[in-house]
Amino acid sequence: MINRVILIAGLVVCAGFGSAVAHASPAAAVGEAKPNPDTKQERVVRYRAKNGDVFYGILIDRHIRQLTNSFAEIARGRRDFSGAGHALDKVKLLAPVKPSKIICFGWTFPSHAREVGGEERRKEPLVFLKPPTVIIADKDTIILPQKLSSQVEFEGELAAVIGKRLRNAAPEQVMEGIFGFTCMNDVTARDLTKKDPSYARGKGFDTFGPLGPWIVTQIDPGDLRIQTFLNGEIQQNARVSDMTFKIPFLISYISQVMTLLPGDVIAFGTPGGSGKLKPGDKIQVKIEKIGLLTNFVK
Ligand code: MG
Image (cartoon, rainbow, N blue to C red; front, side, top):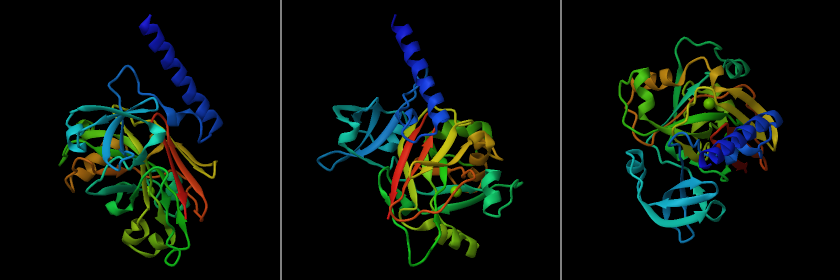
């Protein structure tokens, strides 16, 4: 009987994904995605409780079970529950990790490379860094640097969070080093990335890295749908399988250059349809089976 109930619940969740894609609405069910009962999949949140203390927790439905562990401990498999819990809407969600670095791949989707005048089918990945100070959380505000840029654009992206140190890892080894996946907005001052050979200015302003709302573990990233909504209107809509390079290859590639540490974030590039942000906008990145990352613009 219990198995039947779980099976029926699973079917309802799947039906929710289908209708969410068909109606292309940011408010549809993907943001409520439930863990797959057939795996040990978890949704890991970092949040500030009412008394100001910061914790990690495991999100089940709309309820957070508080952990006493650090990210490093959680990434090693520790789960020490304090016994406390919170309703999701009663806490302030924080970005789910504090990485030592954010590695970004560019022009991985031919549709985006085309629209910004890049190479549609690169032989080698294009890679750049964003400083950790770009990171903001779900529901936080992107600040437009209006004196320095007149063309700030959104880029909805899938991001991996590293769980175990990776160095010179082969593609078939990297997935065991991944803790999970989340949504990112690689906010970009396009007028500056066009001027500078380094993307340090155009990609590096404070608040240019919305990340979250949480990390989903034990998820196959290979064909997830990425959608971006500007003021509720769909702007980007593609699948990870549309990328020129596969995710394990990209992680292996960068691990030949720099050591990937627990908590580091890797963003895999944006599909076609990126566009300009203006004060007052609401921008949302939605990734199938992960969630909905909502930010405001000032
Ligand atoms: Mg990007």
